[in-house]
Amino acid sequence: MSAVLSIPAKDIQPRELTDGFHLVIDALKLNDIDTIFGLPGIPVTDLCRMAQAEGMRVISFRHEQHAGNAAAAAGFLTGKPGICLTVSAPGFLNGLTALANATTNCFPMILISGSSEREIVDLQQGDYEEMDQLAIAKPLCKAAYRVLHAEDIGVGIARAIRAAVSGRPGGVYLDLPAKLFAQTMDAEAGRNSLIKVVDPAPKQIPAPDAVKRAIDLLKGAKKPLILLGKGAAYAQCDADVRALIEKTGIPYLPMSMAKGLLPDTHVQSAAAARSYVLQEADVVMLVGARLNWLLSHGKGKTWAQDKGPKRFIQIDISPTEIDSNVAIEAPLIGDIGSCVAALVAGLGTNFPKPPTDWTGAIAERKDKNLSKMAETLAKRPSPMNFHSALSVIRDAVKARPDAIVVNEGANTLDFARSIVDMYEPRKRLDVGTWGIMGIGMGFSVAAAVTTGKPVIAIEGDSAFGFSGMEVETICRYDLPICVIVFNNNGVYRGTDKNPSGHSDVAPTVFVKNARYDKLMEAFGGVGINATTADELAKGLAEAIASGKPTLINAVIDEAAGTESGRISSLNPQSAVKK
Ligand code: ADP
Ligand code: TPW
Image 1 (spheres, rainbow, N blue to C red):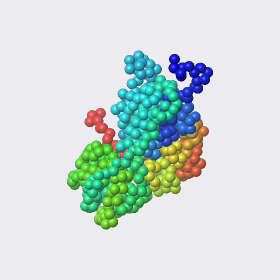
Image 2 (image 1 turned 90 degrees about the vertical axis):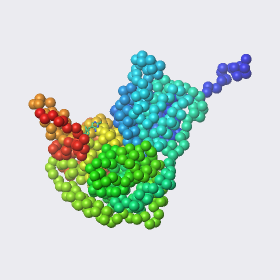
Image 3 (image 1 turned 30 degrees about the vertical axis):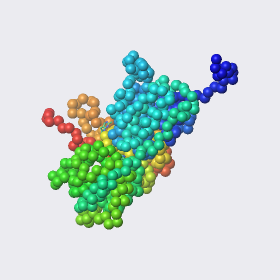
Image 4 (image 1 turned 120 degrees about the vertical axis):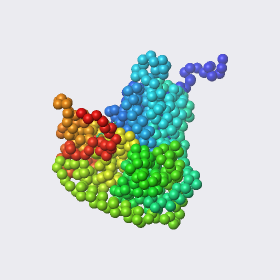
């Protein structure tokens, strides 16, 4: 008999144990992740409770899609993966749209979902919430992993973090079966199994010859243009981006979520002459922006392709993005911080300023368009239209440039993007690459939770409806969010008629004169019904000053705006005349 076994039972010290629940929490905390956005239920209810008990912020939502959107926005704002936690099958599926949207937009997030018993799921024996979640998630995100043993939790979370933030950021799915949470192991072995991820998003330094190629092309340009995309905002190298723009003197256009990287009022911003510069430029440098539909794929009328092809420089971390739509003459592969710093260093002291006939022509068009816009914004029609309501918000953001603007809708989006100037980086969150509706309240909650700054959500009435129930979440956590619903009684406008004579209203029409403000009041927030620009201005100023959850129902002319806003041309047309 061995000596160990001869120790009397009363003298054996119980060993300290840990379990799956605690290992997940410890692994997240070890990697400086302090917030979970989620929705409790079997098998993650205790995980939510314990995470809170262990000092994490656990923000519970009313629907997983909004928790997922919050995680994605937190990822964009902080550069750390946002965490969304859901239950199995339906909860997982509800979170999946947000995961796919995050991946599409290159935002780092991790969707962690509980799942049912593998043995039963794989034999399809009908478990509670049975679903092969890993297989379903895989094509919709950047990476997907499942952890079956408590001792692998550290590795699973480390891999998920690295996959989310390294290279082109994106969404990662982490499948945690219910049984894993209760698995126990020795506490010290558990601690030792965790991994603190070292250098999760390693710098990628561009090759010197690629830098030289880009600078040479820029130098030779007669009409150069720089396009800043949300990748440049995400990269958090604001001073270098500004130095690149200002040292070269090249006019630039910000994509919507790159607004504020430099103040929209910057003398080199060509936003107010957008169509002109896209058509006229001869060399275009893309910085963290893809030539997708939002940029008309780099071809066609928008780019005056008939006048000859443009020459492109593209900075991106993803080598396969290059040549995706048109030929890129000078690809610059690396992280934007390193690439922009290398360009700035390579400019030297005698980099030629762009020709004054180019900058002068832009300035002339800008001045004309801006004074036309100022005239429109000064009008005070009754009822309000998009311009008069947005001019009020424009002033409010000017007064509080640290406020974060969240924006969705069709006309509400298009007009706000061009009317509401942004002054600081990463202050604008919107529908992104998909033009997805439903990000409003999730993004707003994340913005408030991660920054503590005031949030102004500019929402079409249809857009708001996708996540409207989360006003309860906003009130529950007492977040400084002012939601402004542009209420024009329908999807796009509220004027459609049912041609059939049936009493059903047209498919784009909502209940007339709805009072969205009452929704906020139902949960203890402040509701305001604004029928004039003055009422809107007063309500918004009070909301920002008080920091109280507020919803302003801004009554907008139901005939204002256009179908689908600025992208009407994407609507397929029927050839059949009735
Ligand atoms: P926008 O919609 O503003 O035009 P996109 O989402 O189309 O922007 O493009 C963002 C691009 O930025 C993506 O191609 C992505 O690979 C790239 N990107 C994201 N983060 C970085 C980074 N840190 N360094 C370099 N490129 C990045
Ligand atoms: C997930 C299609 C694009 S814009 C929009 C819808 C339904 C709403 C427009 O009405 P709204 O805006 O918000 O009242 P406004 O400013 O013109 O008055 N489902 C998803 N995403 C999209 N993009 C749609 C549907 C859509």
